[in-house]
Image 1 (cartoon, rainbow, N blue to C red):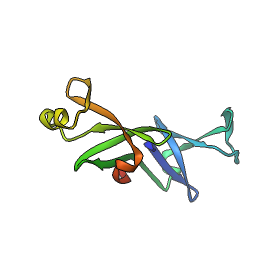
Image 2 (cartoon, helix red, strand yellow):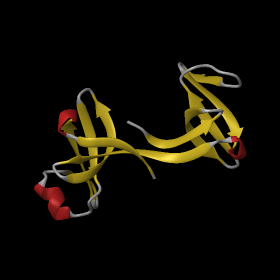
Image 3 (cartoon, rainbow, N blue to C red):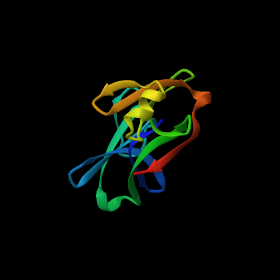
Image 4 (cartoon, helix red, strand yellow):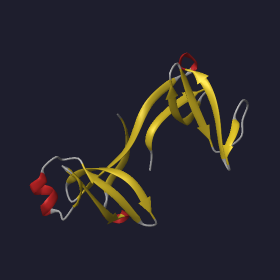
Length: 120
């Protein structure tokens, strides 16, 4: 489940992190100019102007007719956060209060519908 910045550089899409006028690109594979920062994780810095595309990606879905962000997955379960903003609906769905006005729940992956990535 992706939730973060993504950049396209030289025709390849990378997880990314902005850093002033630069962007850090992350790859699971070594490549030209990439430095290993952890086992199986490589990083390279490039200027924003060198990018072909840069945006934020979030994974969303529907569950029981309501809109949710997908926060993560564990095995066959998805962690969802309700984005509808209606506390009555959140309580009706049996969602767990996480913070003031924030409701989350674990659901079987097969119950989530229309799972997709969107640009924010």
